[in-house]
Length: 583
Image (cartoon, rainbow, N blue to C red):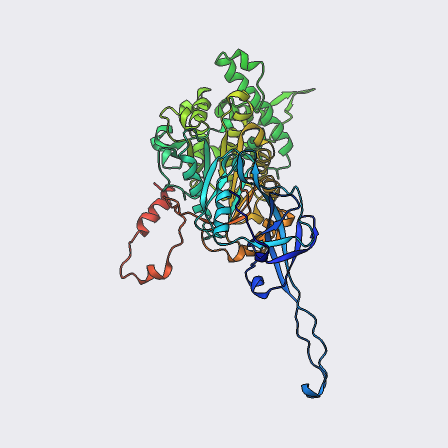
């Protein structure tokens, strides 16, 4: 049964002008004008029978019928001119078409405009039972039907707000909002929905340990090894991750080992490249990997000995070679000293133990197989058939190399998918929490940032065809790399109060929805604007509270200060600070 069955006398107004996807509607009745509000929906008659055009109200104006009186004469002594008639205008942006019947399907909504309204076409309100019925049509997500529930529409709380799960991850997504706006809740809500799927496959880059409360058979927690783990040498079974240095590609190795401000940096980079290739070749020869020997490169994830690397660098640094009369200094004599000292310092830095002091078995080829099966396999591919969503806690990783380590796991995900036989690829989604910390807009000369930006830009541009999806999460979209943001075709934005952040979001919206962003600073906590390929209708949505709340709730200062007694944890905090261990 058709949803829209209006009578002519129910019309709010008529179309005065049409400009591509924007229409101007003239409303003669003041009472009817009051029923039209900005960001509410209206229905317009289409030139095709059985179709109605859906519009989003952007602006409402009313001309003044009053004219100021001039001069000193009394009003009854002056002949009053005829007042011009009032003109009430409403500007609406056309966002889609509702078709009464397509084949055997009734009430099909499409985000296309096959027609535009004719001049004098009637405009009707979408409210009451009609609004409820229409929002339920939208919530059904016709077509592929992969339903990802966020909550309820603000326009009609009886209608559940769904996204198309395929398109949400295929086309990449952004979740943004100022601190305290409900951004982490929204992320947790999406993760809870995904965790119930039998073969879900996702990585969550948890920078501050916010998502520890999320539990269930579909979720597993891992933590990059901290200083306290170097003694116990716990492993995968305990949720501890070591990421040995040999997993770094060439550019990451150079950023880690070479100081670009050193005048000998080009020579040092060349020597590192040449020596690492030699060390990898030696490892493969010792392990009788003939097939790999014929094809590997410096970027191939092959283990090599750090001791052997340092021995070779030290040899080159003091090498004497035969000269015309006597021995002379070699080409690299004394030019590698700073790099060797830098490498030795990093190697002994306990904060970087997850890189340089990992368990002995991490020096074997099989280590990468084990790591990949744990981090990059879906629920049904795991040995225990659990934990397709892997939440990785990076809270103990030093901030100066955080971009390098997060991007290392991002690169592992992309590379594994890229080199996998297409028929066997199992898609994976990367949730990049606090993305502005490791996918910044500008590298500003930081080598680690440059490496991270390069990797995530590649994932944003090419990930879709290899089954790698991005969900970029940040409270400062203006500080996130704009190339990455431009590749994200789904936007979930909570309240944003910063003008720069609002400007970035406006540029991401379609031209016809530019005014939709005016409500960004006044959105309620837990309320979001949802726009993109996964949402049939640009909407305000009230996000449903997740079952398990992330550790990002705002502390109630005044209530806490009102308490007569409070817990004393200073000694424990000082001790943990000294040990550099949160556990």
